[in-house]
Length: 282
Image 1 (cartoon, rainbow, N blue to C red):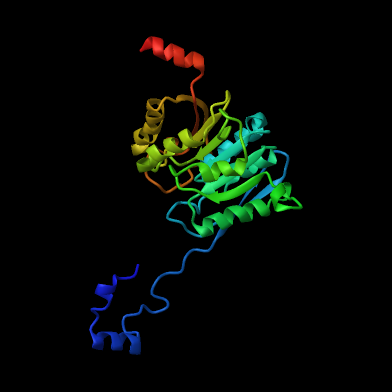
Image 2: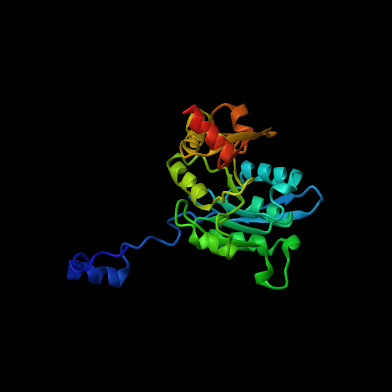
């Protein structure tokens, strides 16, 4: 960030000339360690098809990791393809975008895979889309999957624009995917905002929230997301629990069994019957 003019102009003349002359205060080229290189992971579908996943070399947004939640929900979609087939799908905080790629391969009507609008992350998502042989098309406009940048809680119009014109009362996505995002406790409200903004109210529409408590001592804070969703009027149901062979981060502290456990939850709008029952009970 540049200094305001009135501050920048206060640099003494002799100091400025020294910097210009010799670069006295410049860091040497090898002062900082090099950024880690990009990495590649592979996901094999049940029919043997291979999906190559490129990841950024390092990201403060954790986009350089293929998270267990992404793998488990992808496997779930393969076992239950009707959850995504012919439906519109939005993934947020996607990193490599594995669940979105699987949904697109399984015949989703339209998939929008998103992460923070960092150029490197968005480029990687597009690289994974274009590099997936099962999603090859002759023309870009024929793809059933696109990548975009999105900040959680921001206006939904740019995301909905990918769906084209929608019927009144059906605006939004049929399926949302949130894989391993709940460790960001300060962002829970924005995540629920995003569900409110983008999940349509058609029967059967739902957000799939899949996660591991990677810091077991903070598991109660992870689960507080669902309390907030309920407060906003959503119905929350647990649908999945899987134990992985080993924790994603083997050397991390905390209860290993918790760190190996992936749970899946759905967040959806209440039906008219559920609204009526809630009104009676209150």
